[in-house]
Length: 139
Image (cartoon, rainbow, N blue to C red):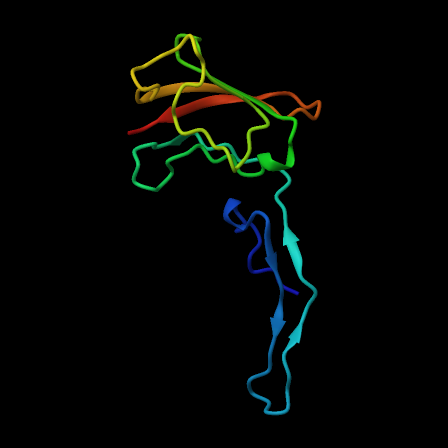
């Protein structure tokens, strides 16, 4: 079988259920044949380098694809001045970061952080090395 989708599976396919249906429309007596269902699960997490918490309903939260598979994770976000502005044990897709500070010693009016570059540390809690990188908030 030729896999025409090779190298085209991206984060949008993560955790979706698929089933192959083969049909023969050229034959009246032919019937559809269906495969067993299978769930695609990406083996790595995808950490976006930015999001835009501006209330337009598009990328308003920091969605980390695949982090739900690591329930013991810990996420820290720091400002460019190395001040912690966000932390969360058990970060998951049901409680994504919306760009507000949850650290009591850091306040910005209504806790909405300003646009800019921040830095994250993600410990998956599985013994692997933490993942780090820049994160941009765009408003």
